[in-house]
Structures are given as structure tokens and as C-alpha cells.
Length: 145
Image 1 (tube, rainbow, N blue to C red):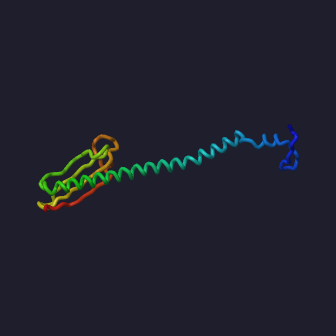
Image 2: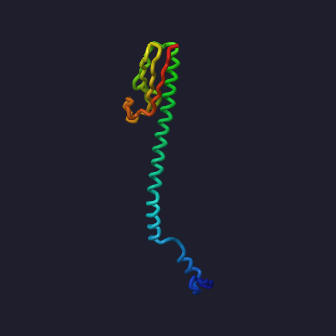
Image 3: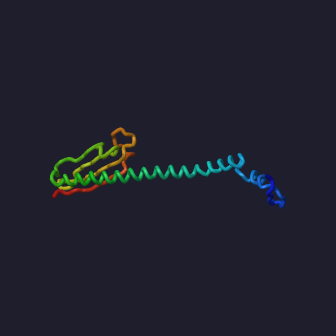
């Protein structure tokens, strides 16, 4: 059983099985210290990931609001060609899912009007686009042809 001997770091011959038992595994203290260090190192990483996710959600909502507002404005401009005298003002119109828009149509003169589209994500889901929920505001002036 102890037929094979090796030298340890002090030059003393010791059985192979004795050396293996000393080298195998970690002590409980080492595991606890390593786990604690890992836990403290993970906190900033998780905060960073949370902030990155929050920022990506905000960017996604702004991008979708821009797309929907531009689509609404294009629709109004197309309808203005044939129905210039119509009023296109709207409040809390549902665009898609939880996205809402308000349209302000105000005449500047008999041949010129200002159209402003406010679009955003309805965060509190009350079907009312509040000022803090507006992500995008697009404004244009349209002349009678």
C-alpha cells in the first residue's frame, strides 16, 4: 500500500496516498471566503445589467413611439389633401398595444394649419396620455393646395 514514495516540498519522502489527501478539495473556510468575494463582485455587475435593461426598454419605447407618431402624421397629411377643412384633433387615441397619441390641429390662417402629434407609452395603463408619458412630439405645418 505504501510501496511507492515521493518527495514532498521539504525533501521528506512520504507515501503517495498521504500527499493526495492533503491536495484534494478546498476547505470550508476557503469556500466561504470565495463565495463572499464572488457575491460582492456580482452586485455591481447585476446593477449594470439592470440599468442596461432599463435603458433598452426606454429606447425601444421611444423608437416605437416615433414610428407610430410618424405613421399617424403621414395618415393625417394624406387625408388633408382631400379634406382640408376637417378637424384632425384627437385625444388619447390608441395606436397599438399600450401606445397612445394626441393630435393638436390648429389653423394659423385660412390656407395654413399646424399639426402636432404627441405619442407615448401609457405606463399607468389608464388610457390617458399624460405629459410625463409623452415620448415623441412631431410638428408640421400644412398649406392648402
